[in-house]
Length: 421
Image (tube, rainbow, N blue to C red; front, side, top):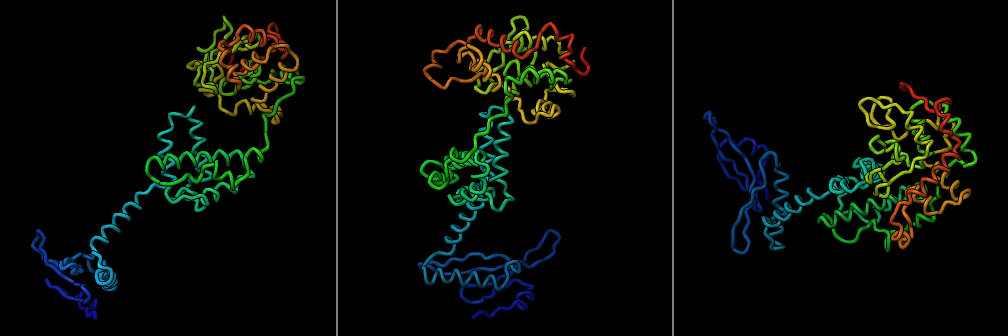
């Protein structure tokens, strides 16, 4: 029976060793510091005999480990020796190894960080990388979200956890949810290969979530960029010409070139040859990651001639305070024109509709002008040129249709800019 008491242990001031029963011992040792002062250190020890061999193990210092806690540990280890014939020292070592392993297991939020650090170089631009991370943080990897995956160990994440994240937005934000699922799958696939988890990927679609969630294509409503009917373009252009600023001119230029917003906003003068009327967009700025030559109509050239060159900037369409126009600059122009129903990208559709419905220009020429990759692989294999001569005729017709007459540019003031020289 235990016979030690806290009062007795607290009173110990000298070196001693006291038995409490079932292999538990209290021991006090004296030690002297550099100043010659003597102190007593108190601790617990468990002694046991297994396979004719006597061993001892420390249970911690007193009173950090209380008398009650020490007795609990001694009882547990006594049972291991007496009834299971196990060495408590080895059992504790294994427990420590498991605890250490558990402490170092990767959480999903940590896995996202490591995965992105490794894959960043593959993203088309920093904005894409930021969007990739933002989607995961918003819906899945925020460690503070108790319903999310962020604080979970990647090795513990199962199918139910994935569904818990996806189901709330699968029907209402289908495109985002589908993209999120793919990104979670990528992170968990990396975690498996990196040795942080085992087994099937619970975020896998085929043969897995496909049996539990409706197909995204059956749910999402196809939403095209709002486009202006080409019959209304002339009136729109006349109204746009009344607007001042680089953003308005950038929007007009993008309409004439049928280019994407980012391609226009990030254009620099070194890319444009005013003599040959060609604008060469480098591959890194193109969606297809392939250099694209843009044929410039006379109306587009007239806009460029009238643009001032901002000191210290090579940007064709600089921001008012320097640098390049923001992503929302052209959208703000449309908003001020009270045409928030339209998007810059939608004018590419306007161009496509006009060219396909009112002209005899070949489809491949129109698609090349839009920098579209041909879906037919056989056709694409033979289409090695960029059809520049034919595209020049196409954009010349487009410029005339837009109703902008080069000879009237300066007189009508279609290019009005703050600080223009």
